[in-house]
Image (cartoon, rainbow, N blue to C red; front, side, top):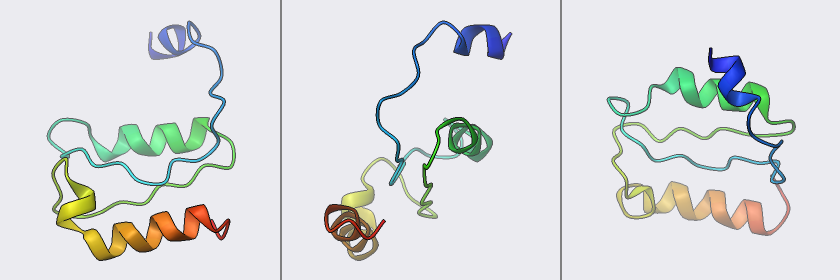
Length: 74
């Protein structure tokens, strides 16, 4: 059924996942890993013990990640 549901949507135009800040209880890490498998050239960066505010809760790591993305290093 998940494959049929996924087939209803067009392929993504963005090709990177740089950060995902969702508590494990709401969206399992396996779901994020599945997206990683489905989106070509994507990356998944996991911030442990984080809620919805990764840019605040893990500011240094998040800022480094965003800077690398914007400079084309990712």
